[in-house]
Length: 43
Image (cartoon, rainbow, N blue to C red; front, side, top):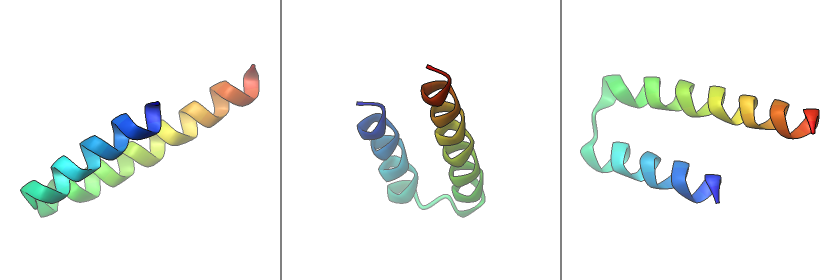
């Protein structure tokens, strides 16, 4: 469910082709994925 949401955001960024924000988006998504993995492992 979360995955689909982030994939949609990713596609939006790639469609807009905002190169400076693309790096930020990738870093942000990587951080969010790490956070989700940490939370799920905590449970």
